[in-house]
Image (cartoon, protein in one colour):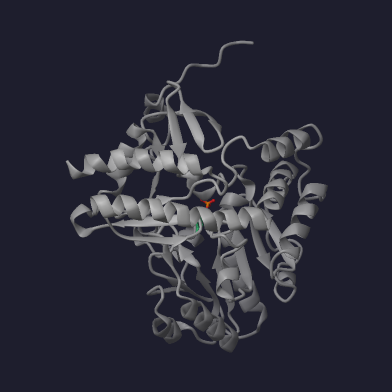
Length: 404
Ligand SMILES: *Cc1c(COP(=O)(O)O)cnc(C)c1O
């Protein structure tokens, strides 16, 4: 076989549209919660591909599902359905509030579908002007024009005006503010049960309950964006299960494919028929390869052992982080649920989260930020305790650089 073309990190700057600024090494191989770069340097993975690699790297369950399906059929187009997608739909509907699923390829697409469904339901209601969407400051819903507009971080949307209109943003966890803008003209309220990109900020249960009541009162769809919190991340299959609040629409992606791109919008029999034949679509959504992997990943995660294991690891992580913090006094707050953990920096270290992840890389640890002041960890849901220990030891060395 011919040798592959030799490439280096500097080629990123040569050939890639510069929307990202990746680390100065290139991961080439992974196993479990460890990865290796081109120089064969080893890293502990506390980033998990941003809450995606739920089973770590190269897990046999995912590898087998992918390779088995790869020898059968890859793609048929939506003129035909396929077995893996129907099995996955059965799993998702049997294990959640939902009755129906629309498949796509990413979180943004799942939210795009959710918001379009809400607009369509609003139109079909016959109530004039029922197209208003209520969203929250600091939220993140993806990068399409509609989802970036629904997101509550103007830095991601303002350069792309004119934006879709009819979207109202109010303060997160402020029920009175939401009450002031939700009315008969509202077709949807979209909210993350835990704001992930926005800094790992959990929604108060009373806030979610209040939104549920307001949506019921005014006939608006309650959309939970569980792209980051879904598929076991919080120790529940979906985070709504921790709150007792049931949405009308739920979006899921990231961990769903364990690293294979897939997204889904879940809804009920009450709303699904509004997306009638031809009203929405996608070429790749529900592709057999993606569905086969997602089905295997979902089945593996949706067990008491794995979900309890996430809660156990949460405590293990928090104990280690709190111990580290008692020594170094770097974090103001350590928060989150399950294996979605955010460490907010003390005021004197404001803006240093990115530096910490860079130093972590030097020490052999992959970590994330969630805004300039929060270091975020979203590792594999089955990360071994010894990898947590080793990762924390490396984090400790990275934090020592901060003190200097
Ligand atoms: C990552 C994320 C998205 C966007 O998902 P993509 O797959 O990047 O399009 C949307 N919502 C939330 C809450 C996310 O964390």
